[in-house]
Image (cartoon, rainbow, N blue to C red; front, top):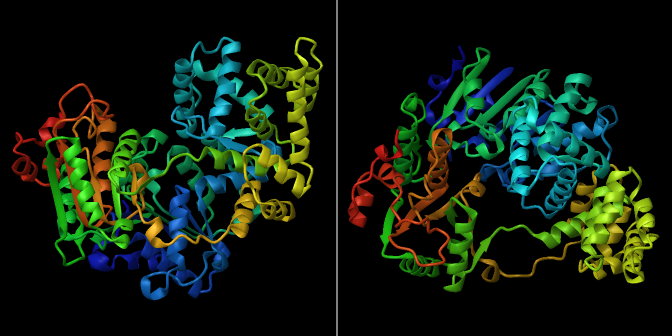
Length: 629
């Protein structure tokens, strides 16, 4: 049985379990706002003070946004809980697990049969990256030509099954074998790697070749947001930490909301049962006021009928805070009320507020409505222009990287699609180089001179971008509607080859970026995002509109239904002060939240604040029983 350390410390001082941890595995179940980041910072400080070399300390997490947030926490002064140093100067390794996997794969690329300069693309059906869309478009044409798929729905169905097997480190399903072989062939020609296969390559490398020399020196690992890692990622973590001195894993099963990436709370729960582990629960919530803690605990009781006593959040703040559920006659009245509330906030308050929705399309709808009513809103969306610019900047460094050349080809809209497809067919089909495919296509007598000229323009642009001439490169990028300053190109050409192409681009962009002269008054706006995107954030004022049963929990069942419970838990616990939940009783035509039935207040309302929703709205009582559990 694992050793539970809860009784060794007062609930307000359990961060000491992390600081005082010696050898072996410590698993920390850290509820929202309970000080996990503070404890990890103090552990890093303690290790360095005890003489541990910073290069031996590795902080690994799930997404880049949390990496950047952790670096910001390190920069904060010590009297504000930080370390008061620049994270780059500190010398510890801070990254996502995928970034670490990429470095491992790069070391062993020859032995894995992979090229040095891999482009990583996402094959999930919900992909937003334009580069991924280009790759999957070519994959569809290639697979359809071989009779493996008939339409894009069948491609997405097989891709779902295939990527699920990669994420869970399982054997590829038999009906996906042909598609997997086509993907392998296309990846080899384009020198790309699917995002979900990157970790598998790293696993294969470490299992077969051992740890790279630079990773053997890692002695102390700190893993954050462990509940968000899928089984393949958990296997890689197991491999890289095997020879280390200490491992601290922090997570919370009740904040696991990424089943779409095959993540599950079961991975963390399994660690809590390991006989060689020490465990501790962080419950002293320093973020949320009492009213929000009460609502969160109500939801915890509903979710976790067993073991709740060890996980109950305890409010640190004396202030009561506010937790409100307010119905409106229709969506217009709801938006009007939110507009009045938000317009009464000053600049600092509006920047400390957030509006959360369970689906992106609904988030975009509310952002549009609020913007139209005079409330400046920002909602993160895919920046296609920036993505294409960065791809071209990498091409400048990597010269004839095949997939980046393919992206350049896609930008030449004056090349007819039929002509472009012939070039690609030659490149992908007979094993020739892209240059040979271009030459062959330009010599084909079926094509008119105008078409051949456009192809020669493309070849000339490719030569210019790889010419190492900053002036010529800048001119070509301008022709491609990518305004890039010559200083950036000069910096890029002079950057050292010791970093990856992506890191070189990022570093040079930061070094040549102009100072942002906009005032706070010009930049203050309300953040609107999905609940999934809010992980790691905390705001004074959290607004959750459209609290409709058709959205939360929707028609989900089984494990997916349980994840919807956790999604609501994550949403409400972002609040440092107030939570306002709103609900329109009717919706107008064109509203993306219309589901063919009259809106109905989500059953979660009566779980979070029993009786409050019914009394405020005058609705029939709703209960947990409506979940069918």
